[in-house]
Length: 220
Image (cartoon, rainbow, N blue to C red; front, side):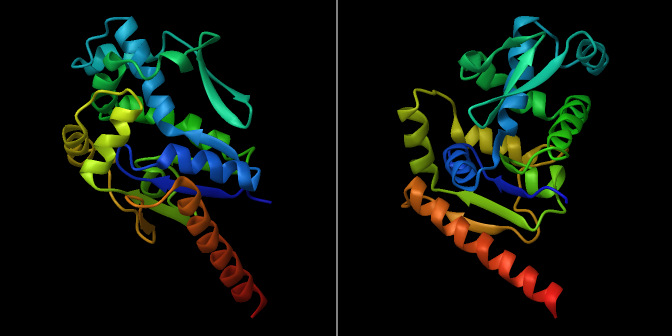
């Protein structure tokens, strides 16, 4: 039986990670943050002082290390050469590199295969910016979370992360490869005035409705 995939996309600080994590817990699915993939690669690039403007160097560099995944408490953790880098992924230097790294075709191709491989073995709730449009466009369960710029900036500040939300939005939306967009068929949810639990309950209502409709079509 094919595994189920719930795709949750949206801009920075729209609530994707918190919502996806709680949703995965409620469903007994594996929680996957695609941002952790890109942040892990960005950390490695910063650590290695990689010149990301040189595509040939980036291509060669991607072959110099091993990226593994490990399930810890229902979530995917990423390891480079056996080292879990999770605690370092919110560093400001990593924040600055994430969007530029995500715009490099070879980096995206390198990570795309690893993300899709997870779906061969697990039911997933995966959050990111192109999950419903690029990574798993075939899934029936697509959601796009958004919130006002002011609310997203407030959330970032509360997390202790100091980055420019509007600049990040521009970078993510304008890149040529897999830009941030609302995937066809995605259900849009404004999280500005909603709690994490309220967003999760709304998603569950839609998921249950989709499952009911799909079953009705199969039975007809």
